Length: 120
Image (cartoon, rainbow, N blue to C red; front, side, top):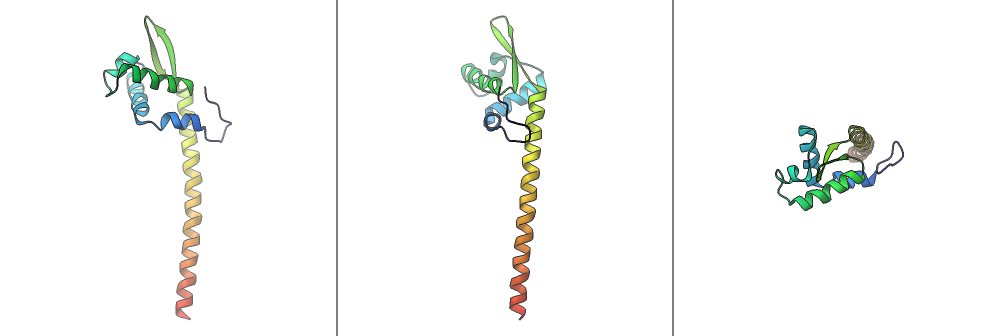
């Protein structure tokens, strides 16, 4: 499982979430509670083998946990790891909001200076 220090962005986690098929798989697992590679493949435009590979990526970063179920494995979303991903996203969003506010203040100051120079 991927474990970046608290307060930092876990690149492996975000790389796993960055794939649209894996995001859709997470959505399906959250709605259904759990699923197998076969059940997910029936609802996605990819093969069962591709689903199994995607589930392997999600499992490696800890977003899903697998339990044996006969010949297959049942996957369910790990709530704690998903909450960690959401917290990271919120933190990154807040940092970018602050950066954009600083850029806005700088741009406004430049604009005021230009207007003052034009008036003089």
